[in-house]
Image 1 (tube, helix red, strand yellow):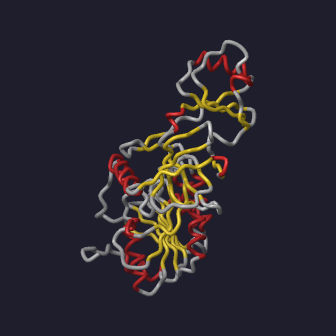
Image 2 (image 1 turned 180 degrees about the vertical axis):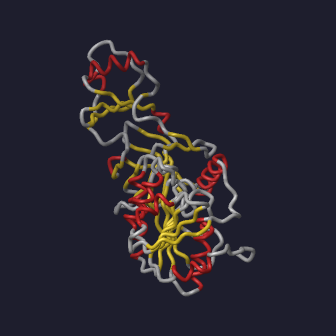
Image 3 (image 1 turned 135 degrees about the horizontal axis):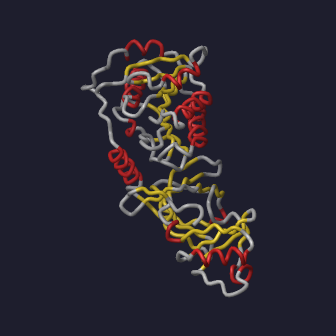
Length: 354
């Protein structure tokens, strides 16, 4: 950090942050939050503080892979959060907080609680740059309410964060500290952010291994198969000349029929099958399941890491999952709607219904 030039106001801010046990950062994208966090954590460490960092930016994660909220401990000087090994992760299952507010909020709180149990002196929480009126402001308000930090540090260019801070302007806690956004921050476009996510995931899976798991022996979270009553489609459902592609698996869940197919059926065939079954049908193509990002959990429901679904063996209830090196003791999997292609590209997974 020899070439780092401290922006005006940061030194003065340090005095009001030294005694804060929990500090939460808010600001739009590319305002210097992560740079400020690294400067603050390094500075506090030189003052003898034991520092933990929670990275709650699921799209541009630095502590752990994208789709996760990461916790890291500062044990030596660092320039980038990527230098810190994650001490714990929480799988959100998305690279965007939109549509995933609840897991982002819960995950942020879980990682802060985990950090405090490690008996650190201070916890610094970095949040994503989503602060717009279409949900971003609400997300930040709820994160602040749940984490209940001593200080909220706001980095803003003009007054873009004020609608968030308005909620707490007369509160004793949190205290609000406003800083001018760094003028040296270069704005990254959507393509740069996408490439960053893909590079991060390729790095995470640089030394992969494939494990085979039985879904009968796992805790299943939002997994589309294995949680219902298995059915024999030919025996239980097809009463007449209904012609659909090969059915690999079918199960009944709360009045719906979940069907996994080898090929895409016609709309007429599905309508006919629904009439024969007498229930709504939710369908998946087997090949579209492959590449799904999974959260991998231990026996306590804590995230061990992430994996990539490689293949589903419906006949024996087995799944093949590509994991990072060092992940052991998988006893739960959490589904996501994100797929990773062979080149590391990310795309939306198949819809719940077809």
